[in-house]
Image (cartoon, rainbow, N blue to C red):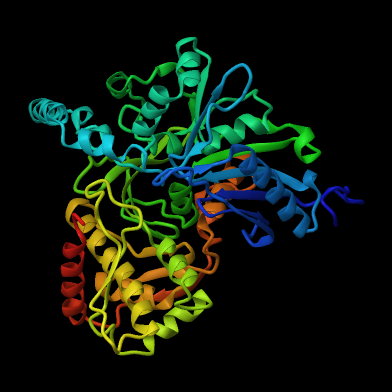
Length: 517
């Protein structure tokens, strides 16, 4: 039944819509009460690269893609918009925009989390004497008081993925934004906030705790925008949106957009949404997402873990009085690398890669070091193949790329085991790269853990739908959601990790050779 026509007869069945606004695509799924997908839509996200290292998104194009993909999914499901009980929105994190409060006109394009315009500023701050002094002060306060309020704040180590430094750049380089901010006429928003603002025709300006905590400007322990950081970076506090629960009635989409008002019942950051979609509700539950980037998340319950050696704390979600914290570690260039390999014709279809990797005994000493997006620790890191020989084939190159994903998973998992003092449960994987059986099996072997892969790997969409469904009463509680999980494959360790040691040692040597290029 077309989405523009009402159904006849008895009251129609209701459904929940989950949208995931990712870095490469906007995806939408319509779910029934069994969490089965009834209809889907997808639109490719086209990033803009105005200068080397800069990554932007056109806000108007993204808005049209969002509206279009929702209509497409509902149409594909053969439903009417009146049958949508709730809309949940998952979005890429730390991508942001600023706009004029009165006119709603943006001052610039979305600045992506992948954007590197603030890399030099990030590196100089992370090396600064002021940072070291602040760190010592907080460490001493925590030691003498025992108060976790003085755990090293998240802003003590900056990342190029965070919005904080790039937001400072906006007010230093875009006079219109700076002038509006001085007159209290500037609004800051991540993708969720902008979409909510547009969906409600400017009547609702808000974000949720998961998105706020991912910006680097919001302190997860105090659960407020950080005035100390904003003062250091000369960012006005007046620009920030109110922060609401993740599963919450944010208002309804204006009826002119979809034909009827649709309740917006959840806003959530994509990794936290995937965690919720995987039903990682208990402390020690672990989620591995391998999409554009790679993200390991551990549910730490009500305990906030301070930033430690590449790990950082986030708010997973807030529902009523419940606040769940996560510890996260991330890797750039997972799906990006595989897409690049396809673009240069190393393979035709991504489904071929696992078979190509298994067609040979090993990579013949060939190593791949990913570094397309230079890290904040080493902006000169060089992406490279090493160990090439006259006998090297496409299969060796593909295997080297896939092995690099598994090796990086191993590195990050080992840090988590060492630093997160919570017994870890079975790992649950999602994201496009989790469909690669070679990467999944090798990762399971290396970390000596079972890894579950769901039948539907679009967990960010499902998590947003779950959160919206809880807020609207479509689903009753998290216990009901657990019963809706569908596991397609379980990867169990088959080889001892020591068997991989020579290859991983060679790969780590290759990484060292790629530093400071």
